[in-house]
Amino acid sequence: MSALLSWLVAVATASAPAPAPSSPSGTLDDVVAAVVARHPALAAKHTAARTAEIQADQAAHAWLPQVSADAWYRYAQPLPKLSIDTGLTLPGETESMKIDRELGSAHSAGAQLTVGWRAWDFGARDALARAARASARATDAEADAQAADVAYAARAAYLAALFFDDVVRATDRALTTAQASRDLAQKREDVGLGAKVQIAAADARLADLQARRDEAANNAGQARDTLRVLLGLPPGGPLPLTDTLDGLARAASPAPAAVVHLELQGSTHPLLRRLDAADRAVAAQGDAVSATRWPTIDLFARGGYQYPVTFVEDQAGLFGAAGVQLTWKLWDGGITGLREDEIASRRLELRQLAEAAAEDIRRQEIEAAAKARTAAANVTAADRRVAAAEVYLTAARGGLSGGLATALDVQQAETQLDEARLSLVKARFDAAMAHAQALRAAGATGTPASPEVRP
Image (cartoon, rainbow, N blue to C red; front, side, top):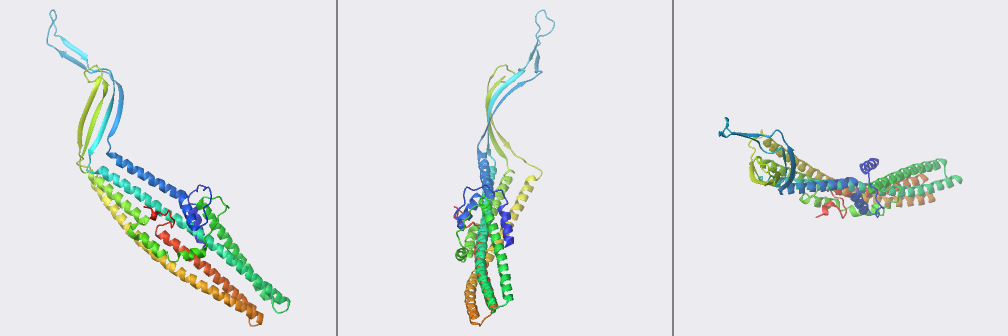
């Protein structure tokens, strides 16, 4: 039990909690729902899922044309010159007439609008959009899986608090009985019918019971502190727990096998959903890689206003151009083939992981169902032991009054009753924990807002 409490504390303090405004109602389902709703790690997972959805939208928008605007100014020197010998000689001249002039302008400026659209890429953009959407589903499933772990931590802490509370109550009853026996032994010793050894034995039993009660009370406080951390409540604040261990054990006894079986139908377990979505994402990435083996067709149009409007003019004006471009990478050194091999290997790995996960979930289902059956049988047996121990204690006390039994017989009967009550508390705790483990194996939180019941 101490190991369970240590694990609960580690889970509860794994992330810095944000304070909650008030504590939820004290039922187990309400506490679990409140923990799942505000846990920072789950909030981060849901934010990651939203980020993945935005990335999917980005991939889908790749089909839209791209529009850009440019403006520029340029100064250039020296300018190119045009020299033409006309071959004509003017009267009175000995040399032919030549034309020498600079072309263009040292200053140029302009602005343009460019529209480009990839008209065809053999489905590469569609494949990337599918991969992004599948990755978003994988991230969402991962959040659901972590929600099941957080819900289990809250459920285990709640049940641990109830368990130790019941241990405290059972020990208080045992202390009352032991104190009465000690008082009786003292009276018998005072009138010469008892012995000091009986008083010493009663004192030793009282000391043992008090130590057990103190330990149980400390563990109950630790379990409640863990719940406060999970709920984001300040230390030492009120935390009413209204459910009882007996009621939760009775409600949980028939559930584990059916719960897990329903969760496994259709691969709705979040771990299996995550692996399936990851496989779909990798497959879509493979389609995108394969599409790069084929050419792409791009359309473009450009228009603007510039000075000079052409290279040989010195006037400003409008200009425009449009065209189509086909690009085909005929050889890339075999990189595309290697990427396809990598994706095929990753898909094989994901399928193997899915098979292993399904087997592990099935194993957990069987284990949880077996624990539930064992715990239910233990509850029934413990109930009977308590009833029998109460009858035995009544008979021992009557025998002591009639001289047919000794104080040792009464003490043994009290010990048996105490042990029977503790075994009943432990059996109820085991039954409730078996249900919690079944929900965790199913990847479910067990609350109305549980991922497995969402559309």
